[in-house]
Amino acid sequence: MSPTTQVVILAALLGHDVNDASLTQLAERYQVAIMSMSRAFDELEALELARPHRVGRQRRLSLRLVAATVGARSRGACNRQCARLVMSRAICP
Image (tube, rainbow, N blue to C red; front, side, top):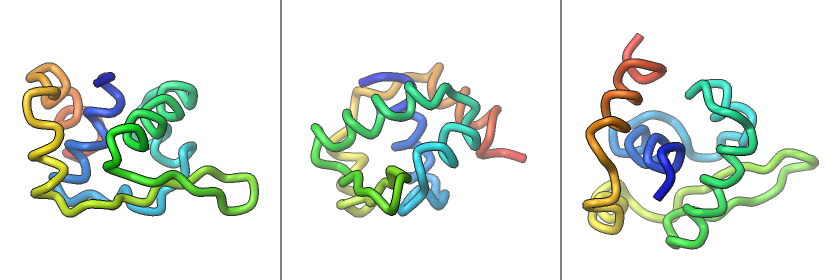
């Protein structure tokens, strides 16, 4: 699982509003490249954790599962470095 995908999952687990956010919004919020966020959307879809959909020209993310299930499916895939990144960048003001 890529670091960007891990950031999105951790943000969802911490209660941040990532549901129905656009690819561009999430990329800006977590200070990653738009291409990295696009790949994260693809990974989340492949893991059946989220369903990307389009609103006009925007690609948006709809989480499919509750936080407990996200945690169970991604257990072991996230690392400490990613957790520190999330806490230091956008999640903690």
